[in-house]
Image (cartoon, rainbow, N blue to C red; front, side):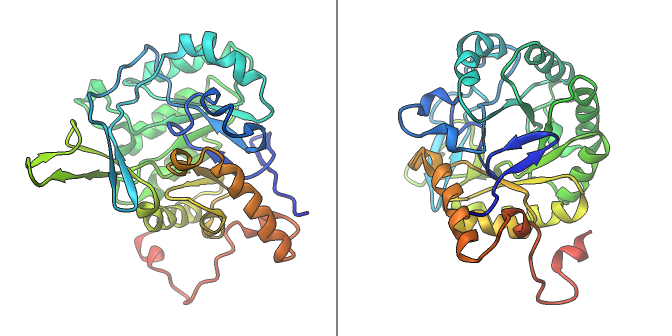
Length: 314
């Protein structure tokens, strides 16, 4: 069988498929529905310093080939997580990566420092698609200097894998990937959700209470592939691909585009074992193609011409 494992900053993942933050709860939600030990890793729901109720409903809307959400980073807070969720996560045989969200740079640091004192956390993914309350609500992730500052501050606090999750709602995601790499990130996750909205034509009101939300699912896959391709050509650290991955073929496309690993998100709401199916499908594909290491797929795209569209952006 082909080698499917992947090493991220010294952390060995048994395969290249993780579940995306916000789509798998804290891991224990799917205990009776899927064998989580067969995943490369679990990325938890975002954690903030204090519990958050999130946005008012309605906050999830189905769209054509996708889903809009405006959950608002609802979570139990880092201290409850440590006492109520981490004991279970310590017992499972897969990597546990905690996603952190915050409203200030100091808050990111406080959450990470609390987690650093606990056993059972293998790494961190940092959600920078959060409003910076000190700067009037501007998202951290739309400012390269802020991405650099957050990465640099957190890097000084941990030796565990540090992954920056980048927003696609910028002109050139490659600039943000480079900023994260230069500040010490071990990897970048590409991409978070696209901004979208839906309208009820009878009431003429937005279907989300917050008017706009994050679009995910198969509809965003072409955009996500392009963002992964762009980012992977700009940095030497691993790019973890996210966006509309529903089956093994989708995941393999991301690997070929330059992703070293992938995250499965919206598909988990349809089938909590989707990530396991996809990991098994990648392995079968490698065997069928007589590929001995899935890593050889990463960045193996064959260009149709000497100059790509992305080259003209960079």
